[in-house]
Image (cartoon, rainbow, N blue to C red; front, side, top):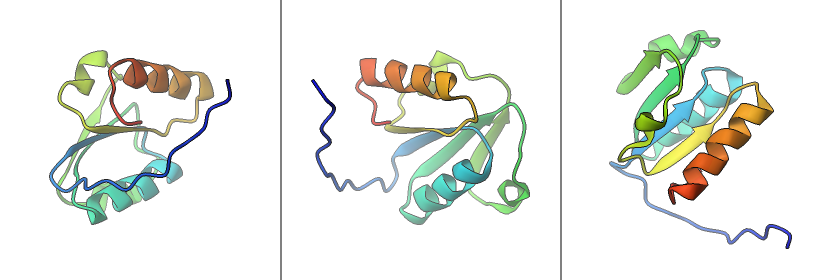
Length: 100
């Protein structure tokens, strides 16, 4: 069965969001999440976009992704340059009923 997506609008104000990665796509996603009021955390091996350093009210952790980072997370954005790893994050979040 093919994936069919239902359009959805959701209030993320005050909700915990996790972004995995810190490149060009990740910075756009982080800025959007902040704009809509999410509490944003970023996990990355390295910061690839300097704009991350000027953002306020986000928690940036340099290190490896770990499944425990998903505790109490409402939404996850997988924004690494590794499609297989992004897929792993997607499947993990999907199994935990976390928006991804």
